[in-house]
Structure formats: C-alpha cells, structure tokens
Length: 216
Image 1 (cartoon, rainbow, N blue to C red):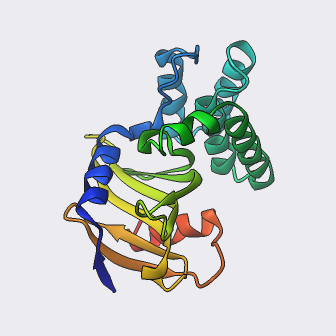
Image 2: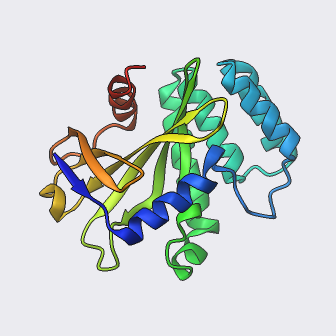
C-alpha cells in the first residue's frame, strides 16, 4: 500500500529530520552541560547502557530532576538494559512532568513539531542508529484533526548523523481507523510497513518491526 503525505506535512517532516537528531531539549532552564550529554550518548553508542544510566542518574540528582532530556535518556537506558517495567515507570514520570510543566505552553503554541516527542529507545548497529520516539499527545495529521500520529522511528547513518529512513504510526480515516506503521520517503510517499488493527501496538514491538524491515 502506498499513499502520499501533503506538501505541508512533507515540509514539517523535513524540518523535523533536520533538527531532531538526539532529540535534545531546547529548554534554556536545563542545566545539564552539552559535554555531559555527549558522554552519555557515547556510552549509548557503545551499548554500555549501565555506564550511561549511572551518568544520567548523577545528572538528575545534581542538576534538574524534572529535565525531560535526562528523563528521556533514562528511559533509553532502561529499555537498552531490557528493564521494561522500570522503563514504563520512567515513561509515566515523563508524561507527568510534561503535563505539569509544558503542556499548557505546547498547546498555546499550536503543537510545535520540534517539541512534540521524546525519545524512548535507541537501537545501535555498526552503521545505523535507530531512535524511537513517542508524541506527548497524539499529533494531528492535519488542521482538522481527522487523524493522529502516535509514534515515530528514525534511522540515522551513525557517521554522517543524517536521517536515512523515517517511519510513523498513524490512525486516521486514511488508515480505515487502524493503527498502521508507514515508511515515509523524502518525496513524501508513504509505504505500509505493518497494520496493527484497532489496538495501539506496543512500542517495543514496533521497534522490532522497524528493525526487521531494515534487515538489521
């Protein structure tokens, strides 16, 4: 199954791909240094999630316990360690902090795309890094809110840091009200990867389907 996204959505997609690598927060109130964040990511790239988690914990204790950037990194580490129950608790905390501190301004600014998600998983392969992210609120597919995006997955070339593949989970009249995962090309063409029926799929299962699709 192939379809096409609108020109507006393609522009937004290209904007997102240009500025979303590592999904770093633009909140000036966050005190975590870029050097510390870089060190955490170096450990993640090495799949040393234990060391990365220790660094995240230290930063959460010393700087800002409600930093969405750090909480996102914590969830990435916990998923990397396959501590899924703890990762799910981390997700709940992220949503609670976002609801309390950020939701009002997010809605007032009309769903700014660069602040719409947080990264939940990072899967590292020798050449490709795949990041999986969830929308804080289901993201409208158009101004009429006729459907929504729920999750997105981006595959990056680890050396150029360029996004090479992009996927999104959509539920809309176009998908016959089913949850369907699409690959979106640079031209805006949407190719069906998998249909999950009427039930929102487990995020980790989607990541497995993305990795299988990419033959990774």
